[in-house]
Image (cartoon, rainbow, N blue to C red; front, side, top):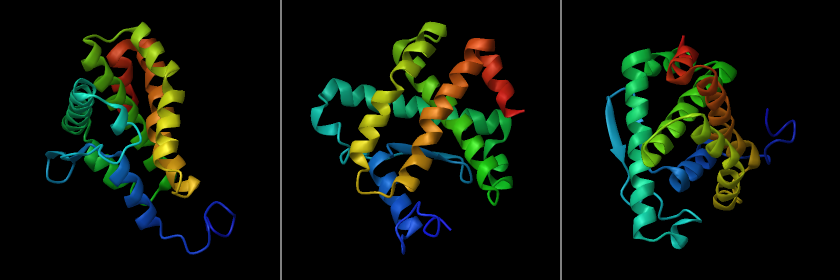
Length: 180
């Protein structure tokens, strides 16, 4: 369908394009089925930013990834996120919306861990830097069909914006309410 309406080049292998994005962007993941957290060794080696990062920046990136993925484990434990994702597996829009909430929540939590606090100011700064996140991602995925890359990025950029708004309206309890 994406090729028919011009979103994807004809013959695009969606699985291969998605794997290309994941290989370049994934530093770790929480497996909802096995309940295991996986940190990928050299997970950012292919990132456009990797060459510009020193040892301290790479360590901070690794800590943020760990906090992000631990947040996914907590989402699963407290809100049954894995089961909810399974229930929406065949429904593209609800699945994307739920993933956007989960990724936005985990992104804010990861950054809050790095700075040692979360408040409205931190949320505002994170949201203000979303265009920088977008630029770095675009550099890493310039050879991936935009429809694939944008869907992946939406979860983090717009998910973070949405969750930050919920945080500003009700703190972490406001974020938790998004899962109900």
